Image (cartoon, rainbow, N blue to C red; front, side, top):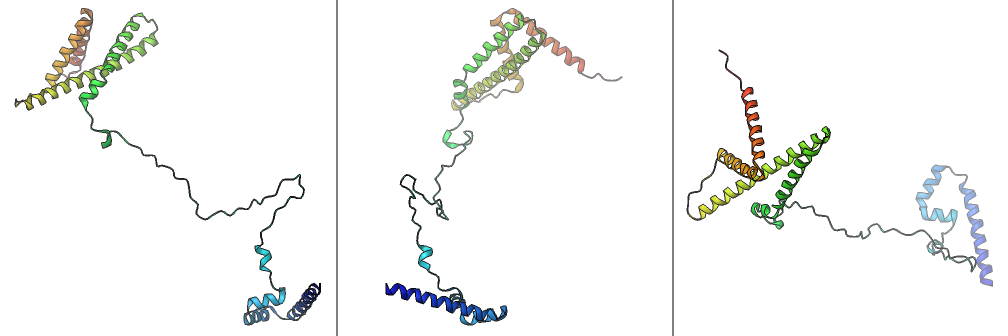
Length: 234
């Protein structure tokens, strides 16, 4: 108990001393106070005016308790966020183009044409179905759409046939070179004749009427071209 009384007495004495110091310093100007602070040091100056700061109270963690046993425990929402944190590793998505990726192998035209040859058969079935629908339809707008679709499929079929002929010709020349023979590279006119022969063979299978209509359309095209040819001025 004497220790507590002594501590209280010392605290009261310190407070009275600080009050006296403040009263003396209040008569000084701001410039004189700054000079005094520089001479004795900021730490001593602050302790003389405000007393020693108890550092243990500042760093003592606050203990959260229940005000009532029926109430939930209080928890501080303040949480220190580290400057650097471990972000979850995300695998980078790689975009590959199979045309230029060596892992996908080299493009084989022959293998590709063999694997997807069924598309040509499907296209021919679609062409036949569209022709049959053209004969039965009476709607002009529907007929116009069907003719556009038929023209597009026919063009695709011609391009596919042309590629097949070129592939066959290249393979034939390659085999001749391997056998020590002189390969024969066909020009565009020869390949066009072969394509026409193939086309007429397909038309024969469909019937003579198809050949007649095809020949008639070709004659009309030739006539249109002849009319467009400019004549010389005498």
